[in-house]
Each structure stands twice: as C-alpha cells, then as structure tokens.
Length: 284
Ligand SMILES: Cc1cc2nc3c(=O)[nH]c(=O)nc-3n(C[C@H](O)[C@H](O)[C@H](O)COP(=O)(O)OP(=O)(O)OC[C@H]3O[C@@H](n4cnc5c(N)ncnc54)[C@H](O)[C@@H]3O)c2cc1C
Image (cartoon, rainbow, N blue to C red; front, side, top):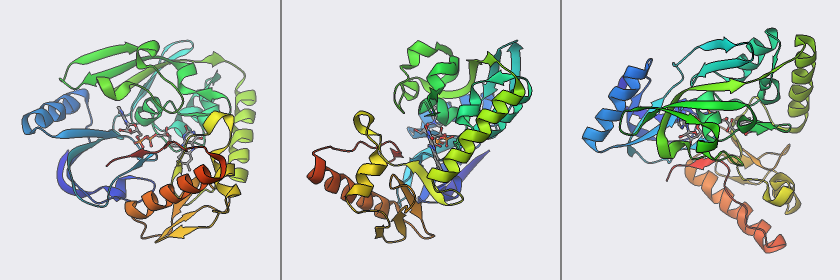
C-alpha cells in the first residue's frame, strides 16, 4: 500500500513528473487514516490524487506522500435519487451506471477523464452542469485523521476550485440526481461526447485545459488568436485542435509545460491586457 520513490508521471494523464518520496494507494478509510498519521509523524506533505488528469508534478523529486485514491471503489443508491460514490470511481463509469437506473446528472460530465475525488476538488463541469449542482455532502478524512461530513456550501465550490483541500482527503461523496428516462439521458450523453470529440484532442497525453476562461471568453480562442496553435517547447506542443490543451508528445517535461504556459500568458497579455489564470493544478 505504501511505496518508496515512485515515478509519478506513470500516475497522471499528462505522463509528466519526476519521483515522489512516498506513494500510497489506500483501499479503505483505515488505510487513509494510517497514511495521514504517518505523514504527520514524518512531517511530510500529502498530495491526494484520483486520476491525475488535472495536475502537473515537477520534474525534480518531491519530499511528499502522494496518495492515489483510485482503489476506493463503490456506488451505493441510498434513496431513489440520492447516491453515494467512493472517491476512486471514474465519471464515465458513473454516468453509464446511473443512466441505466434512470438517474440524470453525470451524463454531462461523461467525457471528463476524472474520478470523484479530483472532480469534487476541482468542481469539474461541462455543458452547463458542474459538481456543485449535484453534490449534497462530502465525506473526508481530515488532516488530523478525523472523519468529517461536509455540506456542499462548506466546500465553497466555484469555477474549477473549492476549499476541499483545506479540510482533508475526500473518500466518498453524496449526490442528488434527477429521475429521467434512460434513453433520453443516453441521447444527451452521446451528444456531449460527440461534441467533445469534435472540439478537443483525445487519445493523447494531456492534462485538459491549462487556463480558466476569463470573463466568459475562451482561453483557447485567445491563445489561438496570438498564433500559438502548434507552438512547441521540448516535447510539449499546443494542440492544433484546441489551443487551451497542451500535449505531451512523449518525453515532455514539467519545465517545458511551464515555459509554454508563460509564453501563452505573456502573448495574450500583450495583445489583450488579459492575464490568463491557471486552471490545471501545478505542484511547485
Ligand atoms: C482530455 C481532458 C479533458 C478534460 N475536460 C474537462 C472538462 O470538460 N471539465 C472539467 O472540469 N475538467 C476537465 N478536465 C480536467 C480534469 O479531468 C478534471 O478536473 C477532473 O475532474 C479531475 O479529476 P482527477 O481524478 O483526474 O483529479 P486529479 O488530477 O487526481 O486531482 C485534481 C485536484 O484534486 C485534488 N484531489 C484529488 N483527489 C482528491 C481527494 N480524494 N481529496 C481531496 N483532493 C483531491 C488534487 O490534489 C488536485 O488538486 C479534462 C482533462 C483532460 C485530460
């Protein structure tokens, strides 16, 4: 369950990042509590991840415990439209599971390659629905190893951010969904999925959108308009399909990503006076 000196790039969708001092994959709440207490004893920082699809680790070794909750599995129906989902369940699987039960909400998030832990933390959203609209409660192991139950409002969920990490590590979340016809839910899911494939790169090594959309403008369009589509630093390139996505062509480094981000930010600022803000989580 606890490993030493692990290459973290193998645990992210961007396939970028160097070694971490410790890496843990808990399978129970007790395991999480054990790791939290161990980190406290060793005075180490904990970085929780679930699918690593929205995070960039540095190229150098970091003195921390990365705790990956992808083995925390389970979906429980606790009322006719209320479900509890463990941190390690992926959004695509959840969407299909709930669709078959005639429960609507997750079909909007179907194409996001995240799992529940990171998706609550980042208030993931697409096509007009975000986690904030569905979440009732978050179940968390606090940084002191205590079990907390937090209401939606306490997490201060906002545009691709929340206060979750102030409290601790999410192991389970409760959601309220809407009853609907499974065929209608499926139709919506397939439409969103099709739209995503048309507009975003897929089947590539990426961490999704690098920057937030400023004041309802598209960060991708801004980066495109300053001529940076296809611009490359090392083995990292700005997608030709959607300029807010950077792609690791194979041997990309965090340093290359950060340089590219700086170039995009500088060029957009010079042209429009708009300072792009990071959407992706950068561990520094
Ligand atoms: C191709 C592609 C398309 C994407 N499209 C979208 C999109 O349309 N909309 C969107 O919102 N996002 C999108 N993303 C970004 C990303 O997939 C989402 O933010 C996703 O919800 C993150 O989930 P994750 O499990 O990968 O999180 P991770 O990357 O593992 O973690 C993200 C953050 O959450 C924290 N965290 C993770 N697990 C826990 C936990 N158990 N407890 C507390 N904190 C935790 C991490 O420390 C980190 O700060 C896309 C990414 C890719 C690669």
